[in-house]
Length: 311
Image 1 (spheres, rainbow, N blue to C red):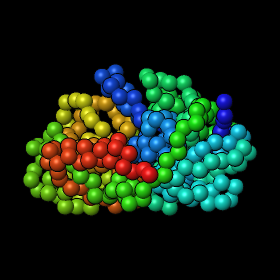
Image 2 (image 1 turned 90 degrees about the vertical axis):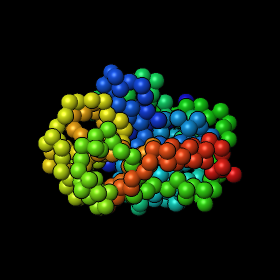
Image 3 (image 1 turned 30 degrees about the vertical axis):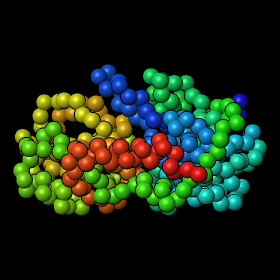
Image 4 (image 1 turned 60 degrees about the vertical axis):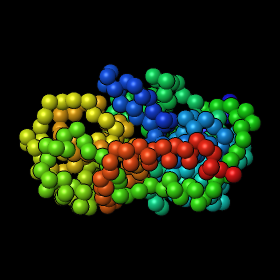
């Protein structure tokens, strides 16, 4: 079996797939790729199933040696990848010869880049997923971010077909900073003035943001009941407003219950865009009817599943 040797892990690099769903009642959030669209496309480029495990790099990429070679694709934000000093294009599959090194640097665009390898990254599955859940130290590679000296196993290549992407169609899936949202369970608790301020204002992602949630700075909202309520189940992309009036977007390692009112919920089609928001990025919200939100996710899935992205 082929391997990857981690010479430098970057700032925060973990093994992720599409996550583990259905365990919320047990208190286990899905985890998985912060930008699942990028992960899925990267896997399809190298001939994997779209759910195969890959490496998720955050803000600053790492350096990886391929002793036996391999086929790779970099998807998501541009981290300036290069193989033995020769630049490697994003969103394209490339063969790495035995002994070559792939280097990635600081991001040139969004927050996260995915290193997808033909055969996928092989780790022990937890609840049917390879995803790393950082807060609990479960899943992935020893339940933690990668370190220098780690050796990762690559699955069998099996002569998988390599694809080429059509840039014009890929652009239709580009991350957004104007996130669309539907009403939350407690929208009616908020005053009309607060709801208007929420959708009219610009917010900045703070340094305290992580895979559990994104804390926002911007127009403060008047919170009903002092920002408190009986705890209830919460969904991925829910926007809570605690006491103080500063919204929080719940993300892939969210708590599964929460006791703050939720003014809105990011639509499914825009959840991958959350994963590409960096600290100090400015973003806004746009109100959407649930019927329009369903149309967006159908359009997105049709583009991915029809093969129209590839030639």
